[in-house]
Image 1 (cartoon, rainbow, N blue to C red):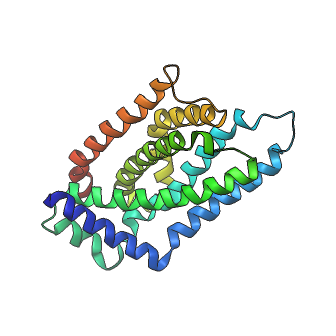
Image 2: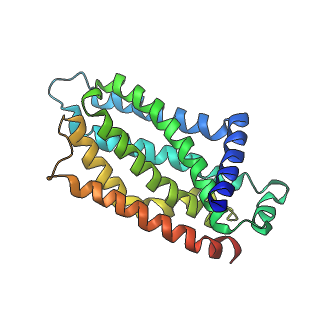
Length: 228
């Protein structure tokens, strides 16, 4: 309970800081909306010869992954001022507590961006979400946590690098390929009106396994990343 309570305290601190500045929130949301808008011109969803469901899942998660990198890059970078990161590492809280708190804050931030972006996406591409909304929300939760865990871990790894804005996506995206592939395939099926069944449930299991494995690995090894 102490572990979780300390993690929630760090998450609340990060969310309060983000609410005051809105730096990551505004940048990520604006990026996702602009991507959707530009691709709506390129693909012309109103064209009856184009089935939007063929590429909607890939476009959605492509935008979410890129927007997530913008938000996650600030996770540990904001602690560099006034040596706040050194103070957090030197505090009695375990490194795993620090990581989980950062991850929870990032998860809430990314979900907020994705919910607003999904509404914009459904309008621009005329995608009907209501029929499969429950499954779509589940896939969003699982995939967003996967992005959050990997992104937060590599944000800690690259925080002291001079080119961390470039290095974070380079390191993050290769690890996210299984999770993003599963999310794209599941989302495409759900947008086409196909519920998750025996034929595609394997991808849901991939997401769950990915989240569990990398969450445990990140919590266990984050002290090596932060402390060395």
